[in-house]
Amino acid sequence: MAKAKNLTGNTYDDFTVVEMLYQYKIKPSIKKARTYCRCIGVDNKEYIIRADALTSGATKFIKGAMRAGKPIDITNQKFGHLTAKYPTTKRAANGGIIWHCECDCGRETDIDVSSLISGHTRSCGCNHRSKYEEFIHDYLTSLNIQFEEEKRFPDCKNSKCSDMLPFDFYIPNLNKIIEFDGEHHFSPIKSWGGEEKFKLTQKNDAIKNKYCMEKNIDLLRIPYTDSEKEIINKINCFMSPVTITV
Image 1 (cartoon, rainbow, N blue to C red):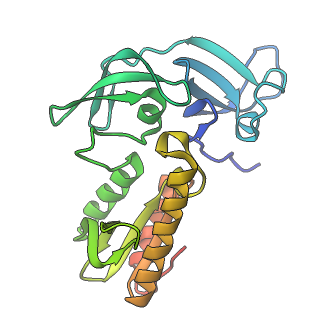
Image 2: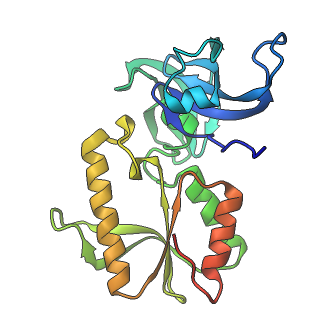
């Protein structure tokens, strides 16, 4: 039987997956092991949830699909460039607890727990890379590939604003671009601005796709659903003489 997809970092309704539990029994008396997910809820508690119930949104309707644990304390835990210091009384739009954090650059900021755990937010704004963008950054560096981050071209803009659209990784000597597409590129996410921001993201992606095609720039888009192994394989193929894109 094929191993279930790794959902780590994904958010489903009020839960963010922090660890996959393969062949797990939620109770010793249960004979059949299943794939579960260790999750953080917006109430700052830990939950063990069956993977299929989580992805289908049926956690409250399938008997034995979910087990609540004790409240989570992330005090002094590090998430990228941020260190969580203490929970505030503020709540995110989805009800999640907002933590006061210190950034490596010295600034302080308040971030909701789901964004910290999932890796969506890893700095106060001084560094915008997600955990998977950092993985791509580190892998390209290990290959001794020269690249530019957040590359902007003067003639690549959304007509509704004057800002140039950024590309995640531009490899100038090969005229190639790698873009990492987080979950907000595929569906509306409350913490990313909801439906309005989703439509803008899709529009900007279409503009960048067209720009690369017109300028003969090889473009590789890597979706957030890819594992680290899949990311490595795609980059290796993309950097080979025969270009493979998705």
